[in-house]
Length: 131
Ligand SMILES: Nc1ncnc2c1ncn2[C@@H]1O[C@H](COP(=O)(O)OP(=O)(O)OP(=O)(O)O)[C@@H](O)[C@H]1O
Ligand SMILES: [Mg+2]
Image 1 (tube, rainbow, N blue to C red):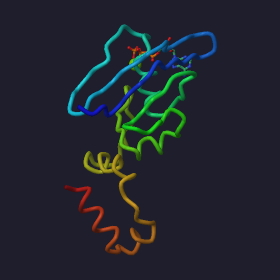
Image 2 (cartoon, protein in one colour; image 1 turned 135 degrees about the vertical axis):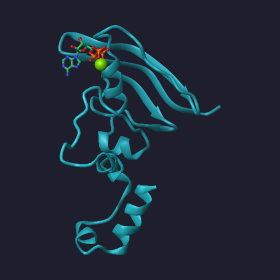
Image 3 (cartoon, rainbow, N blue to C red; image 1 turned 180 degrees about the horizontal axis):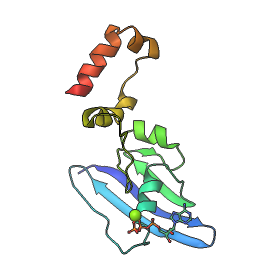
């Protein structure tokens, strides 16, 4: 089976505190894995490293064949990694559906004027998001 995500020996320190030390992981496609550990073990830091919130001090992160460990978070997200957060911040004035649609914004490529003028490019892509 293909490996979709390979984390190879990553380490991350914050000042003198080593939050993640020599962490490795290989995820085959179509499998579900979890990370468990006590408070402060470094689980969230691992997710932050995989998704580009932080960059590892050492080691490699490969999404498929692509090395992503030094890429910015938005580029990693567009490469195909989705995540949620331990402390979520919803848009309280928006509906549940609109909150979910925000997460799909990176899959659209319409411009502000497409929205303002209600052009086809905007309506077509919004329809896809709805499904
Ligand atoms: N940005 C940061 N700056 C300094 N220290 C940090 C930072 N982020 C995490 N840490 C520290 O790194 C260690 C690992 O934290 P992390 O949040 O990854 O643990 P966790 O396993 O997710 O814990 P929990 O189960 O409580 O969610 C902790 O000691 C934490 O205080
Ligand atoms: Mg955590």
